[in-house]
Image 1 (cartoon, rainbow, N blue to C red):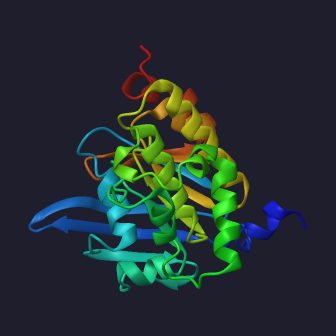
Image 2: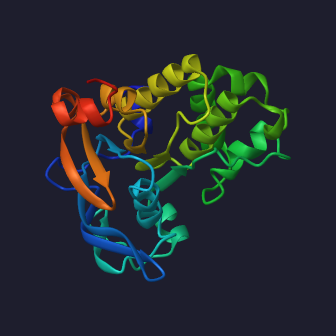
Length: 252
């Protein structure tokens, strides 16, 4: 077994979903945000969630994490009902998040930020192994272990947030707008790394407004509009869809 394979979570059969939203509806107070949403992510897949502003994309991620409660329907993770679990329990079961605007710990060093991603696990040889894996993906982080996170550029902070998520050895990484506020060169590099992470067996669920770049590396996609799934399918089919081209891909 290669070193890469040894780090990958055990893959379940393709027909057994890793994450499933079954007819999920959510509210903010009296306001309905998601309406009977059905989605599925299989082990090893990369799935993107697309849509305009106020479409419900970020709310979907918050619902998966347990930050927003399910009003109706069910959420399943790794074959078990998960919508009754706390956010910490979901993370302990294998979810990790790279939030919008990174939300790294600005006064902590790069190493301290990364170690926070492994706070649910024992320290020791495994921690050093995981740090080595992160530095393989992000050499710049390895060069700046003692630097405070808040002094890094936006692109470097995104790398740090991704590295922190990987330190928990997740089965599913949730990413909220990873390209936001980044220079085009950094966007290209970040999505190359997201693809590399996925190729090592980690499922990725990415919310992204840059539909072209997200669909170029994803297996499948969903499109939300005012809290409802209006389109879904293989990424290559969505890229070719005329409605998608007009609404999200900048083509006329």
